[in-house]
Length: 271
Image (cartoon, rainbow, N blue to C red):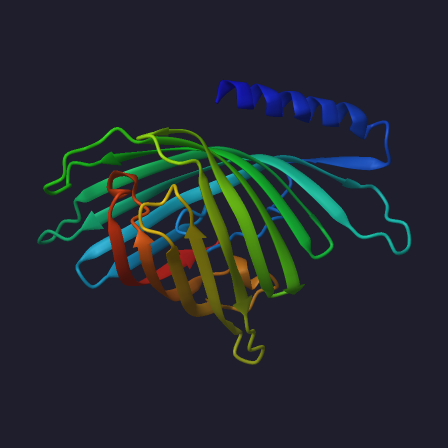
């Protein structure tokens, strides 16, 4: 991890040095990310709560922070706009169960990472280096903890067919893992929003598919169907209600070697 941080830091300084010599501008602490959030991915950076019928609650608390961006100062006629961001991200993934009037915490998975991503016209590109560890909490029931840690290099590409419709694909490469696993996982998915201007809502659908030798039960499939409120210019970043169906390898690290299927209803907040 230290070597990766040093490499990315050196790259950032090298890019900054070249910005002033070229017709390229640099923006400190830019808003947003040029690669749209793939919200159907169970391990996306997001803010959401999911409620299952067996009195289980899933919570995701995450955010990202772009340190700086580079982009052209001026565009020539006919030139395609582009930008590149460099930043940090982090998230916690928690499961709780109901016990009388309490909700004891069962599992806690924590993720931190660095990202470089950009967009050019309808194309979006992303490279991430992430570390994730998984732990059982005080409210866990009948499960002995295991040592679990993963460092991954993730590369993804997305294409926007329209402002509210995209598809994406990617490759996850395990750089190090405890327990030891095969290195490769493949990913594909997409999302579509269908704005209803008069009602200020946007029905939406999102899917995510992941498969490969690193997943004991492959493929893993996740489907989200729901409604985004207020019909903002960027519906994918709005407040949303959704139904979620997942089947495949349990995304919680402490249960990575189990098959898992769930139906839940949830809410997601904009970040």
